[in-house]
Image (cartoon, rainbow, N blue to C red):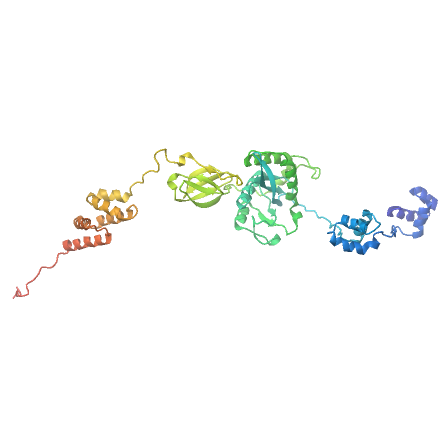
Length: 474
């Protein structure tokens, strides 16, 4: 059958006065074909009207399609069992032309990204091999959309803390940040809402503000919007993770970085360049890194247990034994676990990454007392030493008072020292001797005894007068 171009040429040559034989010889066709086109007078290709073998089975096809869950192979098998005489190709062509269980594909769009306009971040679960064991891991990836540069790392778990750790490492690798970061609707970043109505968690929004970008989320069901970062996961799983053992998580991520450096330098025909060459044009458009970037930390309160350890993510880290029973701050960073008492760091340990193995204890020998000494004896409160220095004669009463006072007797010694400084020494010593004789250790009553003695000394009673004696002035 002649196509529309040839049919149009035949009609134009006929309008120029060419004969049928000349037209057929010029176009390499037959005179019958030329006559047919000239007879129709149109360059439109006529439709072939053929009887469709599957048309007579239309009702059976419509009935079998939902029963076979849309599988045309099963529909064809059931039609053959019922005695139908048609091929599988005839069935699929009929369904395709009449849209029976078949919807034509929608045209795919194309996203164009200017340099530095957008980067995409996502995670995907994979299986990794560490020290001969196969473990579940979360692969986090970040891709600047213009250059297709790739950076990824593996983590045993992926929460908000690890998300900030990963983004900080990725932005340091690229040397800057794009204006926006496209994510899916993950709870790690999203506080509420989806798509354009997404509101990020304040903690993550503050992190993005520090680097000069903002988080945006694609609409639900529009996974193609983040295709730049979704596409490499298949490549990572079937290339990087294919028979690539590692000693631990640090070794695995070191290999991942080296692999990224290698693959980012490979020429890609689809891009007509390598990602690293495209990144050279995108790099000046990135938001520069802050002058000072604080290390990502997760801070939690802990009580040092009776063994001198604090617990963090199932593992236990030692602290100085003097802090047993005290509340401390535990700072978790990418590679360290640090213990702070107020503003001072009192312990620092290498962080244990494994969260799927047995619990581990990380101890520092300097946090334990010297062998055979145990805990150091507690020093006397300074109030006790001051009282014995100022009034050594009260030593016996002080010893008895501490035996009858709960704790170390610091508050009682402090009050007794105040009484020594406020009252005359004579009435105070007399009152203390009386209290010690009668076993009186209530300091309120002791103070009343002191005041009574002071009243007799400082304010003597008036002289007694004889009521029968007359007035001396008379």
